Image (tube, rainbow, N blue to C red):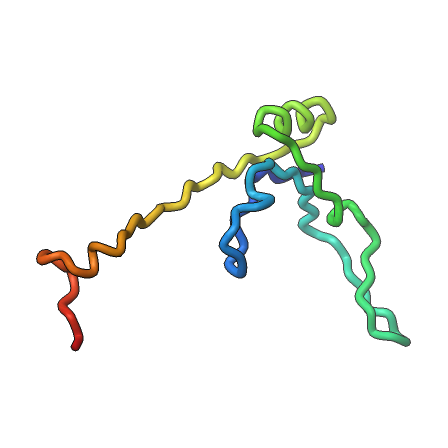
Length: 102
């Protein structure tokens, strides 16, 4: 069974960084068959391992778990976000990057 270990990114809909500190292990199934129920039209799946998400405090714990269980895995390194630091006084500085529009 193949697994993917990564650190989730912040949702674009929120300003907080909640649920981005833990490392997540998800199972990857490339050829999963999905079928549609003929009566209701719901989509069903035979294997529910795609719904399992395991959370770990550190990357090392997630890697140890995957090795202990005999899984093949890949680690996706977390990209640190670029922080653009601005202050209110920069609006009035003489070396502004953009000229005033009014």
